[in-house]
Image 1 (cartoon, one colour):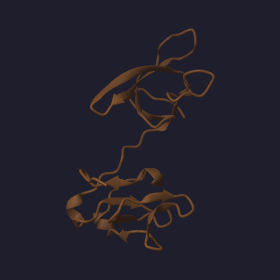
Image 2: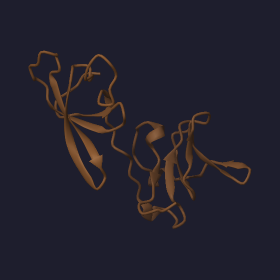
Image 3: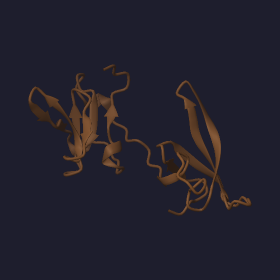
Length: 151
């Protein structure tokens, strides 16, 4: 992965980092400076990290290593869903979006989000393409929970 000034990347522990400098001269060959979101949700702040051209902070793996390009979370227009729908997620096998009346879990064996309803594995109801989010990130990151929903 080639780091680029101004682009955002995902840290090893899943946080968003933005490269703000690509020509720093250090004795450790960490030529890039990135800002990483840190802190609690009620008091977020940006922390400065120094990484090399491969996105690594040092010789050993660190939570701050930059491991992939950042892809923003998908958004969904909840006015298109019934009041009892609480989540939507994308399935890998057909690349379609599904709506759920309960928060589903990602199941690797099915490459999709599901939950058990009684003794049946429930996979959600398919959302028509014209109402589906437009997003092409990792299926595991596709889950969108209705804002304000309390489980």
